Length: 139
Image (spheres, rainbow, N blue to C red):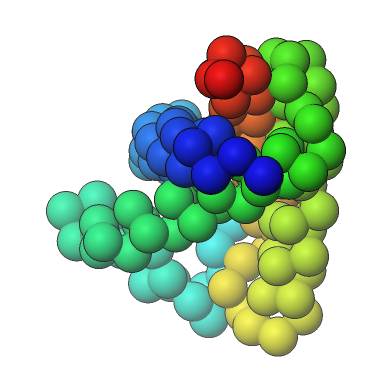
């Protein structure tokens, strides 16, 4: 395994996911996601000015490194294959976590679960489409 490709892919992926998270969760779908939060968990989301950025940065980097690791093992190297593999990873990861959260908490309604899985799948697909060509260009 190429450590250089893994590190660069993970960092690029982490940055892409961080920016996509802001765009999707903070701007595009923010009000919708607020509407599908249950009454039992009204204060689950932190306001934008109270976000804990070290946690966001570490979480996004870890996700970026996961994608880079899978891409190295699967020899994913094109924009298209990165998009598809990223979407599959995003769907499986978010569906697993969100179904568990839905089954054990009152955090969101079923519509919230479906929306979050869709958003996460889109984010990972886009990040995968960015990471794969970047890693493929490296020697």
